[in-house]
Amino acid sequence: MDIDVFTLFPGWFDWFRTQRHVANALALGHSVECVDLRATTPLSGGAVDDTPFGGGAGMVLRVDVMEAALRARYGRDPVELRAERRVIALTPGGRQLDDALAAELAAEPALTLLCGRYEGFDERIVEHFCTDAVSIGRYVLAGGELAAMVVMDTVLRKLPGALGHADSALEESFSPALEGAPEYPHYTRPAEWRGWTVPEVLLSGHHERIREWRREQSRRRAHE
Ligand code: ADE
Image (cartoon, rainbow, N blue to C red; front, side, top):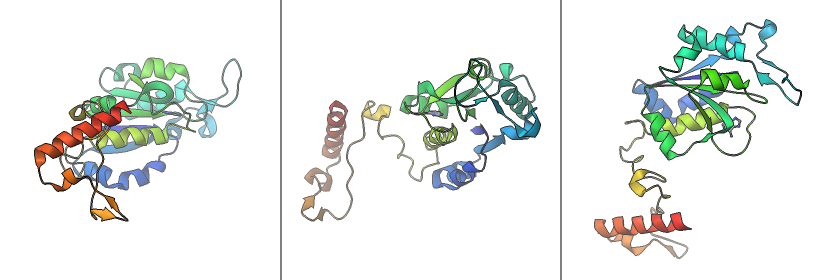
């Protein structure tokens, strides 16, 4: 999978690239590349945003700035680009990211993530250049960069080989394997700590009973 992130802060992603599962994905041939919106801005002084029409606080990322960056990267009109790849605006009002959306995106060969800043995007960016608008939750971040990392984190860990253990991403919270329910509780050594014990069944070595117990715990958590 090739992921391009359009951002005003490409340096933020240096740390992200070094994280184990991301580094694993990169070593497998996937890519995470940043495109600096200031590098191609047609405005003088590296400007990328402007005050909102109609008044109001803050600044809005300009549509001409985003178009210039997309054209420079892909060599074509961004209106046509979205027929070929998912172009996603990170914005608090978008479709909420969940496991199903992460799985959907993990099946794509390429993603383009657009990070807004300040008050966000000129709406024409979302309307004409994007296939999706995605939110990581009903709260407002200072920009889309952390949201882009959250999206990439959950998508990349679903790619085969990104996690050390092949099954780790299959049976986890909200996955189809658990019928969309939260994951069951985990325990490890020591089997007793300050009198707090581990459920007996997990020490039994009885795989069928363990499976049943886990499903039951997962369903119970879903109800709670
Ligand atoms: N940009 C600012 N806040 C955001 C959020 N909650 N989700 C996605 N992008 C954002």
